[in-house]
Picture 1: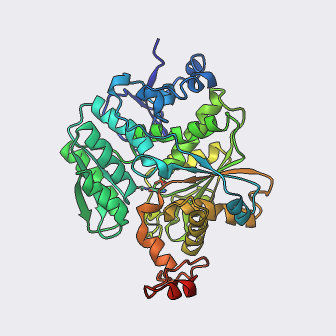
Picture 2: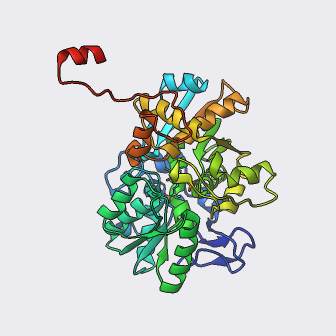
Picture 3: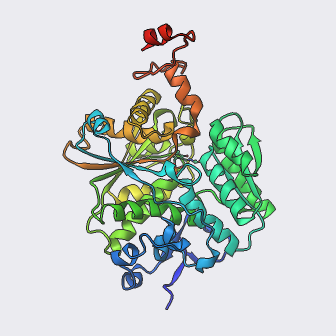
Length: 424
Ligand code: F0G
């Protein structure tokens, strides 16, 4: 007997069948993929997922589809997968000391096929697009979503249209979209303008929208948490800390933890800490005001991935913070880049937005919110090579308004041994 599953409005509770092309409710509310957790609880356990570890078939090898009962019911031969996930949890005693913790782990989602966590949502979103018979797919993006969609769309044989803010995305990401063959539209405006445009275009031109407003993307990104819990033998840490921009990931983490708890996979829920860049902090401002108002800002930050002033998944993310007794904090661009230099020089490496999680931990430690004896997992969301420009400019001390604390500038030398001796 299949477990009942449908799309459900998080505001008014209205439901829609899974095969209806729909991103929001008639009332304007965001949708969840909603299943009967009581019933599902009878069918799955930790062992269901543990047995699949090391399995060779695609649906077991993927760090998303391994958890398929909690993701999306779809025939296994119709899954569009690279496969994704199976990302490592790194530890670095040097980095732990730098933030002031004994127990710090870094789950590196930048080690997914296209270099960011977006592949987790995209394998599910593009699989669903195929199920629905979509003729084309689209998204607005600060770069990583578009790189991921361009790749998965190409694998699925679907035309891809992406909307990126002109001149404001990192080169690694733009090059991926072009290379994977997506029709790339550089919108004269910021991400928030591109996001509004793509929603209108998808409605008018019958293109399937694959931003994280799409509930199936959120289902896939839940697997970051499920895989993390499985890697820790289902013993949750005290805190999970992540960067927050359009708030799709924060939403997914909250839903994953809520469901894992309801299903008996974990016996307590860790606290989420969502970290924003100070210049792109609408969620932080809303949190500071007790979530009484939805704040919007004009976003400005060096962490271009999270340069977002009007996040679409706002309400789902508020719920995630409430479900997990979570918090929202903010960090400056200088804190982000110094934290990145620390992650990088530990031999791990990440893109600027990702380092905001580590910068956030350091700040929360200083504020006494996270305690020294607690266990903390930082999510690194994107690969070091996504934004080489920001890295090189940091080490050359060429970032406006930032004095790098850990610069490692290259040295120009004459081609002689003597010059090398001097430089060393
Ligand atoms: N980290 C990275 C590297 C990202 O690319 C993003 C979002 C985030 C964090 C924030 O995640 O939006 O779910 O809160 N990038 C999107 C994009 C917006 O278009 O690639 P979020």
